[in-house]
Length: 439
Image (cartoon, rainbow, N blue to C red; front, side, top):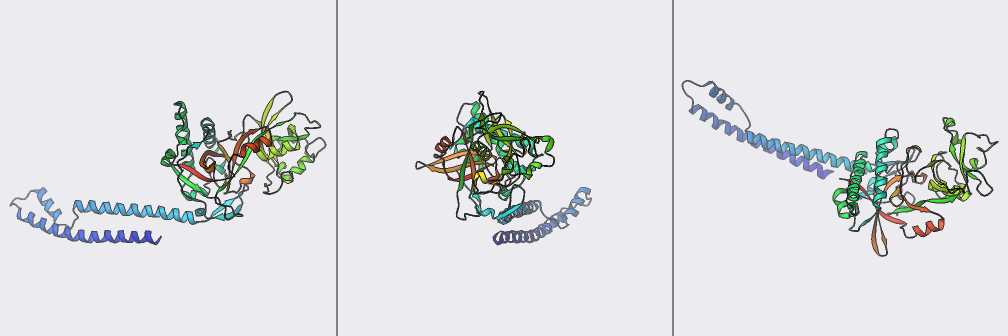
């Protein structure tokens, strides 16, 4: 900060010196010009000449000198303004960011300098599915367009404001990527978004270093994986499929009665005939307990019914009890109510607004603190060579509020845990992460 201040003092002193020298030289120039005018006076003076002589005898600054001073003054102002911007960024980056949880309650302070710094992608082709990435980018951009006014959470400045990243920058990034993908797909060519040189040229690359209050030495992001699992189920309760997933009846939700009950309360039968809250929810389908727990954990489930039909079911509203890290699934008190949907759904302030997402190009992350729609590239080693993979933060979950050290990668749709585990065994557990922002 002292270096920037001393530069301002030096430039200001230089301007003052120039003004003094200029005034002196202009005084000599004025005397010389007055003598010339007096020597050229005629008996009958022209009015215009008289006015000119009077003007020249007054103290003045020559036009070249004025232009020089104006130029230096402008440069000084620009320098000061630039320095103010630099200083503001330094102050902003040094000011601790207050991370919040899903209830908007303060959880911890973090110095942004510990989390972000300027980066550059290595020269390795980026892995992505063009059509699927276009879908997620487009749907995320549409969410901003259609629902930002109703969902102020996505307009939060978040921790990336310390890097000068605004919501407008996020939207500009999404728009640019959508345009590039559409053009490349229309021309039947690999997208330029796979070229790290194109990315480094057109995007600000911000390296994201993990900040884990409980693991101080963690530097890379933990990359967990989630999936949509296929489960058999029934529309009616049977001996095997006897665990319901419920949908809230909107006629009874005004008092948010559902926030008073834990998962264990729900499974005890409060919504079943004879239960104290019977009639306030509707059973959508019946699963095994394993199917229920996977649906609650993953957020979406694909249920196959005996008649050959199938459907996606996605979490809608929770009982607002926080997820407890480290507690086994069956002991969690958090519970979700579902809706039947037409695709895998990600982030959204209500079920009708949720973003349709695709596996392989979607991350679930901390939307409140990191922000929706951030384009992420993760870097890891596989078989001795660098691998880069691109995706979008278009989903979230209870484990990510707050969470500045982890992303959850949507790996795919799987018929079993075994198939899922086999697939993710080829994916990294930790990775270096970069955030892309259009320049």
